[in-house]
Image 1 (cartoon, rainbow, N blue to C red):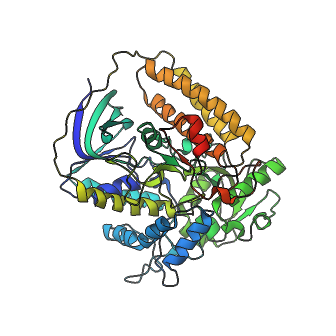
Image 2 (cartoon, rainbow, N blue to C red):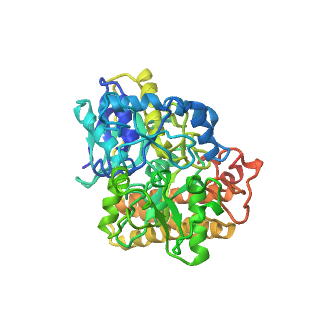
Image 3 (tube, rainbow, N blue to C red):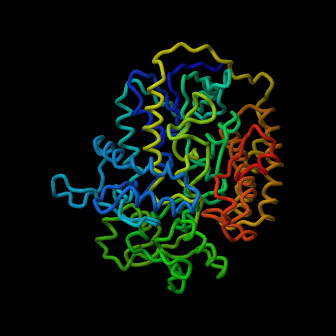
Length: 538
């Protein structure tokens, strides 16, 4: 038997965006955070590099904004970029006040400045970090403060299924409890989606298992527009080793002088871009993909071994230890690397307060299209976006919410017409097929033919999964697969609509950029599938 719960605010997602929003909301509000797994299994906690912000007197908001817009290949929303970078330093100071143990220039000195590193696309050193485990330290800091707040309850092993609307307003959601194996109802005055991205739609990814596009799919089904879903960032350098699943080699290795090499030791990035290894991620990922296909090799190599052993071990302790586990001593030899799906630059359309098209529904972080990233995300702007928009959304909610306001009961989950599945193999087969054709046809380099093949397969899978979903009781794998196929369809249709190459979207059929496509690619669920594609990019 399902249960019904009531909170002032329900936050779906337990990464940086979700935890930060909870801490910024007034303590007079009852808040629930729905976490799919433990709080370490988030993309935020896996982040290595850092958080970009203007903290150096020689840097400026104007420079940070310019770098972001250049990396975004001409389609960032400039006002959103300026809003985000202007609030960066204040968010970093907030974290420092919470006790986050940032790496300092000189820990021996009282009030030492933060140590700043430089990453791809940045013209200045502006990335504050905690060695090479910034995300882990950030999550631990936020978790400690959430645990102290009596008005915040973290509900583990809860998978959100669908939003509930009443009179065109979000009134709550259904969520599956793994512990109780039942679907519960959550009533809320406000719902915040902080579910992260959708990189698990690809076969190879740097993301944790939970990055299945849940928030994007839920918002889409509830009538919210999405934008720029064709811009999927592939991190250029993930460790290539049969046992090293989804381990990322941070951008900061290249920022500190790491060189990309072919198996014969030849450096190749200067042939592709004047910025060489410090070019934005899309350029570096395409260059690696090109060289791997041209030479028929399994990987390329990232070499930082020309730096001193002490430097490497102090700057990249986690990477050093992880690689050593696989008998790779990065102080003496290069690291084998390959690209992998890393970040979803598009998502649910929001304003600078995190508001979506559905009243009372907010979204923050990687689940969104805010206008910050454009056609490509610049390194270390992701955690910045989480922090800035979590604070602005919390302030907007605080201005209009009434603590403890009564809310009508919502309809319980009805599973009277479904049965237990005896065909779970269908789910696992469809999951594998989806991720493989997305990798093969909708990856780093695309063509119309590849995209049409992917679209045909996604439509078949979507019908099959919808039929399965309608006949059988839900399970975690089925819920995630249902969301992934929606996200796959959105990515494919967005990619087909953008008849040019820009940023992370590169197609051999339209290799040049065009001024006809300077707007975001917007898809609207209220239109037919045919009309969505024809109206995109207007």
